[in-house]
Length: 437
Image (cartoon, rainbow, N blue to C red; front, side):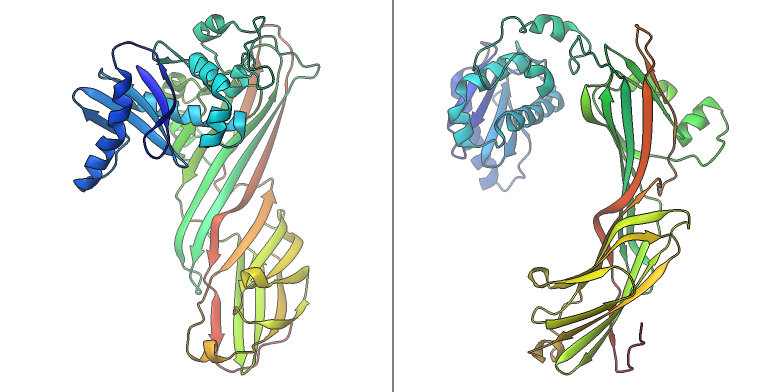
């Protein structure tokens, strides 16, 4: 439990605070920043939880602000820090940006949010969709007809309001996997991982319960069942708060009452080595005041699949000019602001390969001769529908509601490049002429 929650400026001055219990004094807020400075002077690492004279200070930083919770008891620090993160998310959704000026302009709303999100020091409703039913930016007052926090707080489902109705009940599920790769020029993997997410758009009436089954390897092992196809071993699985964790741990069944609209149900990671789905390499030949590139791209996935919106970003010297391109497929564009040229193809079929040639002038050849040119890796962007690297599959998605209506489930799979999909394939060509396209 938290006895006091406050938002402080960088100097430690309280911008707004709410005291839920009388077991701490407001003077404790002023002791927080000196305590931080004392730890810095001692050379100790800053931690999210500090203790002084029997009082615990739990805090997070957002931009240049401190969000602080104080408790004189042996409180659950993890729960309170998670609450502070949720408080930041709610304030950002209300005001767009959480800054000192936004706090000064919205004292009334923030106090109302603090009262709704915590009761007597215990976290309560932290979903912005629920809070907007009680607190609106337009009126700055509670709507007395909607404000029934006690009923919603005591309900086990605080993320979904009552009375939702749709003429057509549908639920859309997207399994999206992002591939991060770093490969050497000879094709050897330096780093590889797959980050997955299950996203849901829920348009269901009432208070439905959904059950999702995946081809989870641990589920088959614990239940003794035999997988018909490939079973996937998921790592670092994280769920939305609506998922019943006890049921997942005991039965490996993902059971939940979903929020209304869009939300991320779960995320996972797979560290099994994955070969590049889209491979690109470039041969480079310097000829005095000009440089030529021969770029090859190949789709290294099944022939029945295809990649959409493929982009190959090839780095060039900063002073390159007078670009000339000739591509076997797609189009090429020079982007001087990023010191690269981008080869774009709307569609690349599995097993297909294409080539393109680029020619640039170099007004200054000194950077090439003295070796100051940095070899920046090629980066790729793509999206492959109806395909997953890991082989994860949705075995079933069932929706059950007491009214007995039939829900239409839709499932879609997408594989795309991650934030770090790099191929170290740009090599210097000693002098042999580059092959034509």
